[in-house]
Image (cartoon, rainbow, N blue to C red; front, side, top):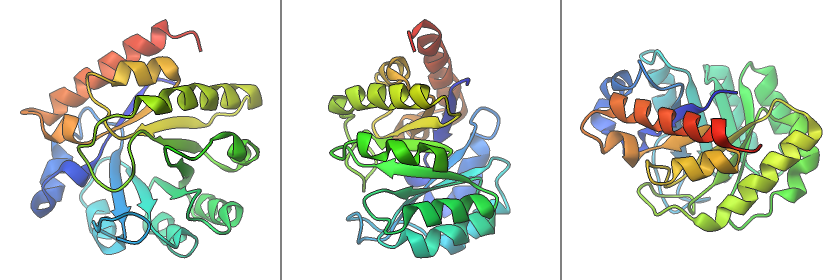
Length: 225
């Protein structure tokens, strides 16, 4: 699969979300929406009403990343609202298989997120239940953090797991993705890249997306996986 870029609006201007999403509509593949509840992570961002409003104005599909305490309850509602992808965290879900299947049944892609310290191997049997595996490359909760190189071996192991099952599961990385780190992520096996400050901190967010995608494509073409 060709690399995809999902700019995170966590780094956008919350007072002008529709305008900031429009800035990247010509180059990005997804709009990444970080939903945080100040319980699962120590930050409070936005929720379903904002997602519902944004869906009316976004030409791009929304990739909703739920960093919340009770994803089993809330995740299906994001899918039903029209999100293109809904990711729940393995550490928070109490009934992940049921919730992932409900997300899919509502018409969205189902994603499973894993924190940096959580081993990925324990979720190999769930690969058939998901469309995307998200590996956090920072501790979840805040944008602008430094990329954790310690996660790169886990990205490689996750890619090997996916290859071993011969499944069309996307492998997403989220946190600290920038011009300095995206090629290492692509070489390790990631194919969907969440970038926040690297996009919205640039003078031209659309051009920043284009350059990140070009870097990812170059690294992917040279990768052994």
